[in-house]
Each structure stands twice: as structure tokens, then as C-alpha cells.
Picture 1 (cartoon, one colour):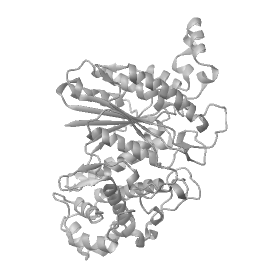
Picture 2 (picture 1 turned 90 degrees about the vertical axis):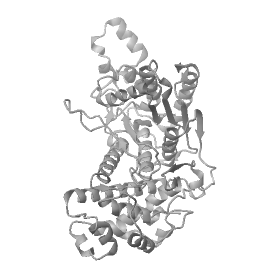
Picture 3 (picture 1 turned 30 degrees about the vertical axis):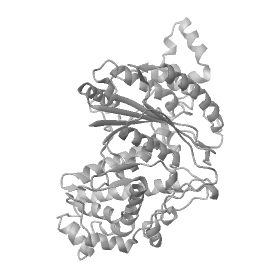
Length: 513
């Protein structure tokens, strides 16, 4: 058995977690996974969106993988994604995201400059100029890894509920259980660039003298620059994308020496390390200033990062791996993505099959089934064969609060995954380098320019049903009439019960070959 832990650092790390969650929903992660986030900017829009997605996934998994409702052998929501609880009993503090210096306004306050003796204060001023000492930390480390490194090194991991969960689990290493921890972050920002080696080192310090230390592995994915944005106007404290390449060059030189020279118990700091970049940079037509305003659309390189985490959890390999985008005039099809598959016993699911079937399921639920399962609407459809077989015979009462909430959460998740896919397919790359994964125009508007957040979805009743059979590129499948026939005539997944019978049967009916 392998215990898997995935930690996203900074806003970029949070967005990579978002892609990972959708892989899990599609049945493409072979393990249960504990997920956490590290970000000084706790209100960052990217972090908030990922937190909401994780809460929704966790609620759906609890509702449809336990008790009276169970998806049985369906690949949908097969993996449990364990997200830290939202409150820490006695203190009432959030544990969903760990901020290295919560509530600390600036570096001067973090190190209690006012209490320093003169010699120590002079040394402090030598390392950090006035702007560094007074830069507000409420929106993160502003693309300055030396600020992030200073804050992280000054903090003990003990005592924070977020880290107590993670560090406590390392005791499993003593029993010989395999433990894999994967960190993902950008190399050009503030939190991730500074934090990855520091956290990896702190984790190794806890494990290096344990028995069975060989069963512990740390992996990571460093995101090289992959997007750009207009220069931020202000006091000069904000990061600009024109600085990305210089920041990256300096960071890579540091990491080269670090990974070459540093080891724990004769093992490298990172067992496997992936690098993902994009050239030319994907242009985002708005400023990046942190807080709630920094909510970027999902971008394809983040899916590559999520796939690297999935690979690390399932394959025994070591070394450094590099991922680049296809040629400038190539279409980004399913074949351009790293290959992967997960064995579910009765079938093996690959990337196109898993995500393509999930896309079709979300479309079908939102457009053709979900609207008729509300508290009031469902009574008019009792005569439908699928309704009798999958709802009534399973003794599911759609008017019960718990079932109504599950369907609302499912509705929300289906919108999330379609918005995510639309963002991947609406990358501003030009016609010669477009993304061809799914026919996103069938369910989402294509913005004239890239804006904050995911592309807006069409109202469900306005989804283009004629496009459904060819919704997934290079994978023609049944139309909605064919799905209706399969839902009526087919069988729910083995061992499914309650509302899981309907959800599993619809997901099965939407499979691509």
C-alpha cells in the first residue's frame, strides 16, 4: 500500500492541484491522495477556486462512495481526495491552506526589528533594503523568493494543524509503508520558488533516521515560465512577467548545485523532478496583483504538471524530466499529452478515455438529466424506464435534503469540469497552435480576450446537442439518444446502490471507446 501526499505551493501550485482533482474524478489516479496548499496569500483567487473545488469533490465522494449511495465499480470519483479540515477545533484556525507568516504585515514585524540590538539591526538592513522590510505580505511574497525563503526558514512546522496531519503520517514509514510526497510550484514566483527545497529538506529531516527510510520518496514539479501579463502599475513591489526569465535562470543555477550536492541518507533531495514550460508564453490580458483579483483561467501546462504527479504516485522511476510544448504550428491534440492509463480491473482507462467520458457525462447531466431531478420537477418523469430502474427501484427519494444536496453538488462539479476544459481549449495560441481536446464551443462561450476566471458556460438548455457525438476530438461516440438508450437498457455498475446507481449508469452510458 502507498500513502500519497500532494502539496501545491503558491497560486500556480493551486492551479495544478485543480487539474489533478479532475484527473481523480475521471478515475485516472490509482491511489487515494492527501492534498494540501501552502500560500502566504490566503485570499488568492486561484487558491480560493481550488479550495472550493476540493470541498465539492470531498462532499461528492462522501455522498456517493459511502452509506446508502455508492457508485460501486464505477471509475467516477474512485479516488478519495483528503483535504485538511477547514477548522482546527480549539483555535478555530483554517488548516486548508498553510500561510508561513499569517497575520504578519511585513518582514520587519516578522523578525521584530523594533526589538533588535543595533548590530543585529544593521545586519538585517544589510540583507534587506527598506522596501523589502516594509513590503506588505498579505498578497504573498511578490515574486521575491528570498523573502519567501526567509519567512519559511524562520518558521517551525510543528504546532500548525496543517503540518501536524502531514508530519504525523510520516510515522507510517517506520512500519514499512510506502510514503510518497509530491510538491508542485512555479520556479518564477515567490512562495513556490523559495519553498520547494526548504520543505523537501524539512520533510527529509524528519525521516532520515527512521527505520525503513527507503520507503519514503519526495518528488516535485517545477513550473518554468508559461504565461505573461501586462506590467503592473504601482509601487514597484509587484512581480512583472518580463522578470520571469531572469528569475528562472538564477533559480535553476541554484537548484542545479543544490540537487547535485545535497542528499539525505545517500538519497537525492528529490527522487524525481519534473520541469514544465511553454514557449511562447501564453498571454493573459490583465494585471496580476494577488488577493481575490488573481484568478487566472486554467492553462494546459498545469495539466502536464498534474500528470507528472499522477506518474510519480504510480511508477518507480527516478531522475529529472523535462516537458515542452509542441511546435509552434502544431495542433495540441490528445496525442500531444503524456500517455497514462489506470487499471480498474474490468477495464484500463487512458487519459483521453477518462477525461473525454467525464466531459460527456457532465454535458449530459447538466443538459439532459439534471434539470428533471429537482424536488418539484422529478415527479413528472416517474414513467421513464431509467427513472423506474435507477431511482424508484433503488428506493431513492429525490425530495430528501441529502439527495437534493448531492445533486446540487454534482451540478456544481459538472460546471467546474466543463469550465476547466473550456479554459484549456480556449488558450490564446492562435489558429496555428490551437488546442483540440474537446469541442468546447458546444457548452462554453469563447471570450474575445482572456479574462479573469474560467470562460463562461452557456446556459445548460443552450448546449449544442448536435455536437455531443463528436464532443471529444478523435473519439466519435454515441449521441444523446444513444446515451438515453444505454441508460434505459444497460445496468448500473456492480455493487452500486442508492443514488450511485443512476450516477454510475449515466457515467457508464457516456463512455467513449
